[in-house]
Length: 408
Ligand code: HEM
Image 1: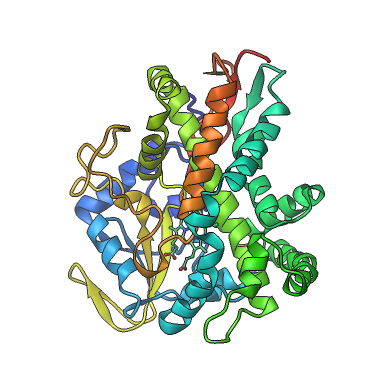
Image 2: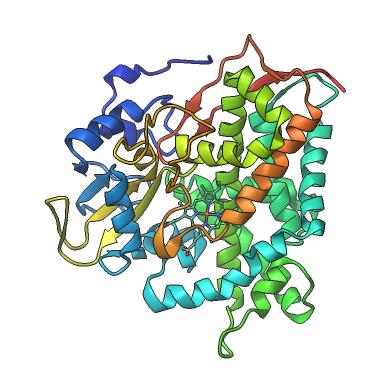
């Protein structure tokens, strides 16, 4: 299947891979991770990821499942403050960069806006389905599309815009700002401008919701309260900036991978098309097989040790959850995509105190979206003239998904 080789992957080592950036054009980095897991599971790197500060601190990368889980669960030895000092520059203060009591307080304040009880309501599911159908309506008569661009990418952001109660007319503009935010490590000026623009755009909306709360997510966030303490307008806007990025970019890759595996295996697609009860298992295995977010960073808060390797205080520790999800110590035949897998406790939503707050929403969106595609696109196949492949280091997903189907 689609394999454009613009770099020779056989010559690639970890350092080169990391310098190629979060969406490195590398279709199979798993060979490198497998060697690391077996020979050098706590490996010092000469380079840091684009999420780390690059200020001369020592950096280590972990590739084994148990090491990754140990670090993510231990917020005392391994702090998330490094996240605050990196993406916090464009996001502002958010849960993902906080530790201990401060994290707990913020997490408690944001949780009511994302409970499954709110998300599982029929009204919300109808909105998500309608959003998927609207996206499909735009290309279904053509008989061909790039599912990555025309669907996987557009759909989660459109859900977010409606979930937040923002005007659909602003979707394209919000989309552009989000893209600039994503690229902050490569173009800091653009990232900072987008961050400012989102602040200017969202602040009056947040202020208005505080005065006139409705049933949307922003209203739930501004009215959430513990012991009389509420999030400030700036904290709410910061959180929303995190959400558009955390919510839209990741779900896009998850959907892309799900389409990729079905296009790759027509029998699998036929099986899922006929038995929709398999959709959650398909999503779950996609999350493990190619983790949409592949790396999560922490900082050693004390001098410490992992697997016999000394980690000085202040070092950055990159937990490679994509590599951990293919650890042969945890998963049988880990490189194989297996929808019937039972041993599937992947760490793609993270682990421990920072476990993804939006996991229910992500799974719901992916389920509704895949069902909409399978309900409406018949004879769905890869376009034989247009290759595509999985890419990425910090994020994983297909680079494009050109397909053909029966026009309707
Ligand atoms: C497939 C989709 C998604 C994936 C793979 C994913 C993955 C993750 C991971 C790995 C973390 C842990 C970060 C860390 O430990 O530093 C995380 C945290 C988080 N995610 Fe997601 N996420 C997804 C979708 C979403 C969505 C849709 C939302 C919003 C509704 C969301 C909101 C958050 C938030 C707020 C946190 C921070 C939680 C905390 O720090 O306590 N995510 N996500």
